[in-house]
Image 1 (cartoon, rainbow, N blue to C red):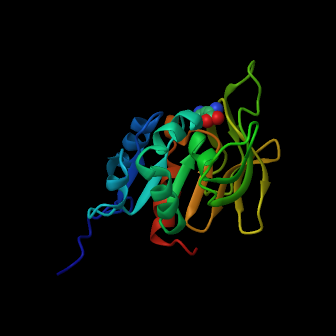
Image 2 (cartoon, rainbow, N blue to C red):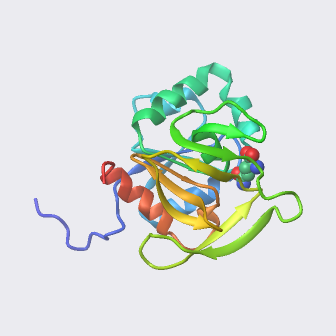
Length: 206
Ligand code: GLN
């Protein structure tokens, strides 16, 4: 059998789960669809660990406290914690808060997977949302970033790579199979961050 030469370089043949308990999950599904990935909304622990495997997971933005309330039912938090230990996962905003090892302002339960300290609602109430274009090491130059009541990463562990910053603070970070953004890449037209996540799934050790 020959490989089709019309195969798009964006076609990943991947199935990505999107945690759909609350928050901005629909826009992630749209972005992933434009990149050729299949998406599945994840609402129960069975969706996550059932027979139909997913290649990666997005934990979207929203309210991390509200998501935690849902996750406290049916041992969902434990299942998710086990899942993110080994499977590529991308957390945006509230999702980054859930992935973090250390959450402050105030402290709250998290998955403890990504070796960062993150401070919730770090930009105050007056200017809590903004759209900036900031530097990134992703190919293609500066990146539009939509911040909504964003947290701030105040510490990164030695295994964490910073891929983009805002005023010197990391806003896009990677630790092996884990990726986190304090902004909402699904709300911009630029698909580079999602593309990066799909590439990461193919080469988790890169
Ligand atoms: N402020 C929210 C939280 O603390 C995160 C905001 C977002 O996801 N846009 O969970």
